[in-house]
Amino acid sequence: MITTTLKIEGMMCGMCEAHINQAVRSHFKIKKIKTSHKKGTCEIQSEEPLDEALLIRTIEETGYRVMKM
Image 1 (tube, rainbow, N blue to C red):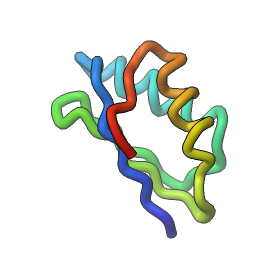
Image 2: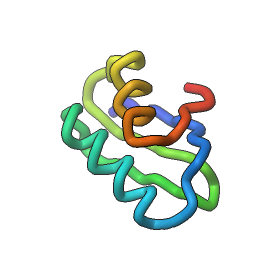
Image 3: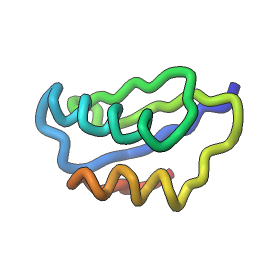
Image 4: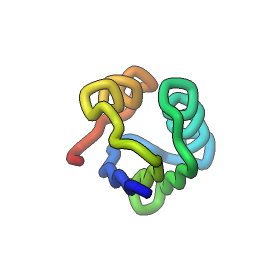
C-alpha cells in the first residue's frame, strides 16, 4: 500500500474536504482518502503510485492549492 500525503491550502469546512475527496476518487483508483480542513492535509492510500501532476491538477481544479507533495 502506498500513502501519498498532500498539504492543501484553502479548505474551510467539511464540504471542502468532500469536494477534494470526490475529485480524487473520480480520477484515480484509490483504496482510502482522508482529508482534513483543520490540518490542511489529504492522505491517499493506493495500491500503485499516483500520477503526481494529474493529482495536483485534479485538486487545484476544485479551487484549492496543493502546497507540497
